[in-house]
Image (tube, rainbow, N blue to C red; front, side, top):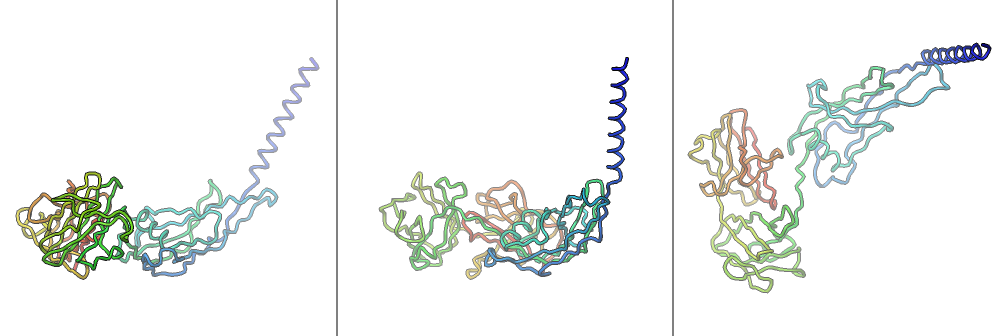
Length: 352
């Protein structure tokens, strides 16, 4: 019987200890001071490839002040989150950047450009207005506090991938591989494509595997064929050519192209195309046209054999895409078609 009472006493004492601990835990509390103030090094930012490695923007803030009811039990569990959203959206769907552990955040031009384009989804080469604030949380069961709102106007740039390339060196550009236009291989599988302007009535050229003559070079191997020992490839007729090469099969082709827009958004609908004009200095095709709300595509040579539509990237085109491009607001637009980057084709619509 004594043994039983002894065990009961131990159980009772243990319950009292747990109750005491629970009571102590309930007394432990933390209180947040004023929200940190967010500061930014600039309110206007134009990003360019030239500043890709530079520190272009710095965010800074004071550390959140907290008061613990029992200082001996204090621990820093504060989290800091930079919220980014389009201006006027009241942070309804912000993109969050974790800044926990820092009181300053620095970005290079390349990193901030990637953040703006890939995460915040800002359009390239357009000045966009965004807002930022710092969200601070001191505990999971405490409501977060927010800093002041900072406004920022930022113009991102297009990040163009550098594909493995062949360089079209020839009489059209002084036989200099170092400055020659390129055709690119998206999959690095030995097949290349790209557009090159030949301004003369007859053009001689070769394809070099590097920006010099010291590596493998490809010349004429007969009609439509390449050879590493052949002479110059000759193209008759001035024009803007779509060049394709396959070094696995040792083949090459060059198709002269003239570009236009066509579709429900254009004045000619899907029956009559609207021609674009090549700007030799800017290396783009352009036109100023009236568009209505609707869909359209780019196509070459008044036919559908070579056409471009939407890709998965805004502003980037895909050859033979089944998806049409679209315009939502009617008006006068300047259309720009940029095929100057090997295997990476882009367009812009600018409302006048």
